[in-house]
Length: 436
Ligand code: LLP
Image (cartoon, rainbow, N blue to C red; front, top):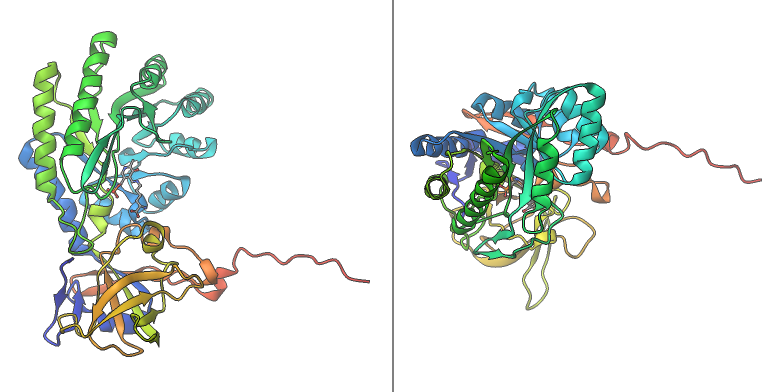
């Protein structure tokens, strides 16, 4: 179960503040981040790299949670970010994030997005396909600019929670396939373009990974490739970007590894393979998203209706749901939740935590043990900081919640709650034809 703290009254606290007070002040549904936890996670990766004596970059995968305040925080920590759209890039620009520390991902970046990236001289465009190489060359020609790039390759490994599978030729929409020779063809194209500076190779093997094996295999594959290419083309990239995917604890079933364990395994494998293939030790980049913000986020909801059906679990409905956290409905993702006024109290009953949206599948937690609850009680769903708010929608024309950062026992709104007026802001009146 994800860890949580309580105060002397026995209430849940977030970053030292009483969750009930936060709910009262900012209303619910509310997403609250404990900023100290975000910093700790980032620093744990950083400390691990320093301990392993590797050159590194920690590039926060901002799709997990993107907001001006979040980019400000990563900037302060000295980190890099990855963005996957013009919108994320624009948000980072608003935060005055250093563009040299931005890498731009995506399997279908548009001309306009690539142009924005080139004009702002992002640190790396991570090339994903031949169409993109062509678009980017056009942009570089017309702007007469140069840009750093990496090649995203599909090494034929995908890591899933408890095992990794080696699929040979990966059936994925992302990246250049290694085995069929696409990656090599891309390399030749990029090396022959003087306006593109190829700084590294990238791969990403999956999400919520709880083992080191997938990363070890990924490194072996990438370094084998680097060795082949260095012999054939006398080219060796400086950077190996291993992507993200470091798993966290959502429920008791998850046994996450520490950043230190992951980075140690990565370091060992990199060193062994550098020796084996007689290569220099590359700079290692990682792109953690979930593991930076996931555990730091809490979703606070107010209980409304209760429905008791004989011989079935009671349905306890809250004022949010799939609009602010689509993950249970979309991936059958599991979460734990606690009653904010008494998270340590013995559970009395097993309930189903339902969302407020008009869809039967809008169930946040299928089976949850809770003390006796009442309408008006605050429920906190734990570890919702990654891919919760960032995947939120306005389904049923419900506004997205507010997001609050808590640090040093102080709270601050970082994204306002959407109002009814916000919901119709982009609607335009239709000029109806008059009936005669
Ligand atoms: N790098 C690349 C190239 C990625 O595609 C991703 C995630 C990451 C890094 C960050 O992975 P993380 O460390 O956060 O696992 N919406 C899904 C997750 C989608 C992940 C997509 N790519 C979810 O809610 O679980």
